[in-house]
Image 1 (cartoon, rainbow, N blue to C red):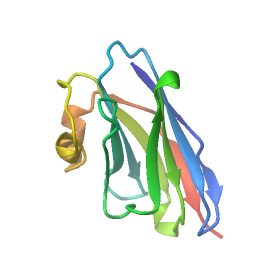
Image 2 (image 1 turned 30 degrees about the horizontal axis):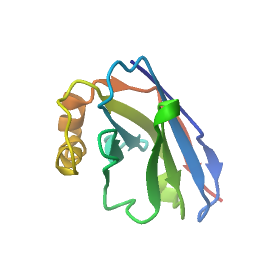
Image 3 (image 1 turned 90 degrees about the horizontal axis):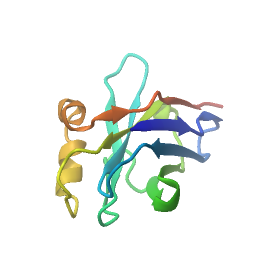
Length: 137
C-alpha cells in the first residue's frame, strides 16, 4: 500500500485549503485513513480519521468545526477540507492507513488510532511522505 498526499501550500489566515491522500495497492475493503500533522519542533499529532466501513469520522478538538474529512471510495482518496485556517495550523500534514485491523464500526477504534502518537505508530501501518501547509499573511 502506498499513500501520496497533495494540496499543501501557502494560505492566509482565515483561508481554506483541501488536502488529498491517494491510496494505491489496497487489497481489502476495510481500512482507516487518518490525517496527522507535525509543526517544527513539535511532536506529530493526530488531526482526523475516517473509516471505510461506515464512513465514521473523528476529529481532535483543535480542528473540530473547522476541518472536514471525506472520502471518495471510487478513487481510493481521502480529503481533508481545512477552513478558517490559523497560523498554528502550519505544519507538515501526513496521511496514514490502518490496513490490518479487523473491520470496526463507529468511532471507538478511530479514537484509539488518534488517542496518542504511540498508538498511532503502533496501529497505522503505512504513512505518506507529507505535504507542507503554511498559514501566514
